[in-house]
Image (cartoon, rainbow, N blue to C red; front, side, top):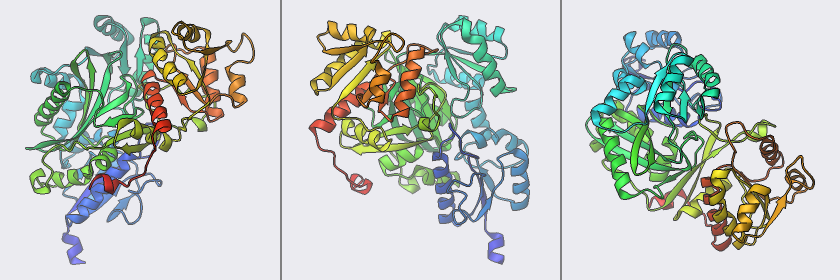
Length: 520
């Protein structure tokens, strides 16, 4: 009993209740933190309030407090347990938002300091840091009122990305293309932001988005992974499919990303994990945001590269060095791993399935193989997206995607699929000598696309949205696709990857190998 009394304790703050936009991935990080503390002979005190998590299992930690993640409750626990410090970087945004308040209350924050966390989270301080380092950022500003938002938006130019401060999962985040709809979104964002300003960024259309995970010990910094999003910028990173290693970026761009990441990690004196999101447009690398914490990609990266990043980060937070732990350089796997998101749309009949900057996924899966196409198709199968090898495909895309649709339709026709389309898309395909059956709009005649879906005659739907406020036909099509469990694709980049995956599935055999075999 005396030995128990003198053992050191560390409090780990979990992610709180799981909800759409709050991934279970943070639970993985909290568990690995607990396992690492056990290995180091330190008692782990877990604070979390979700019965569905592994971190709240009776045997994961030495002590469990099933309490809400509020300042008052955490301080009560700290007063009782008297730990050597608190880890805030494994539970997502919820504990990170408490870092400054805990520091002011005299609590020791282990790992990256509360001061560095505030620099990354506070828009003005973050902007000053990037300017000091000579790094690019999309034009941006902050606003508390609609009038201020109008002035900022006019100055930086539409489209703009409107988002609250200090939130997770892109909550109340919107892409705004014109002033007429700005007021409503500013009002929503202000309600979520509370006393903090609403952030307004120039939205970079048709940019490639990139996620980077890094681990640092305050002296040495090592990139865990650079991941390329399959979907273009504008879709939340939690909803995007990602490829590791990257599939289209040049060596020059990758080196710029590495250099920028290391510079920011050094400036913020990162001890533990850090996640950075970039947008690549016209050969330039723009920093979108920096999160001085574990990101929801940490479990995916750890499995893809064979290195337990959350466990190593915990040991680093306790004072160990990366050199001692044997992790000193970026691991670029010889295989390809693709992360895909899983969505709950079949639980919400009538909800539109279009992806955007507000996160809607509830989990993620991974496809792994020796090339991108095989890995991608495996990720789709794992996510429940049963892409067909034959049958009929319905294509209806917005004007800006029509040129890309030609390549997609040609490839599908070459694989013996029959193409159906509405008049606008069909006319472009016919001009390019693609055989296509024209379907009337839903209100204009029958049989229309809804009839064919109900009769089981459509095996795949490719439908990109026509704008922020979708047409009535589009919503009906997408609702029926979910209702009848038909594979659907709502982005042109996702369609290109899926069609290449279908071709691979038809022409090549998919084989199963264990994760351990890939890491031999």
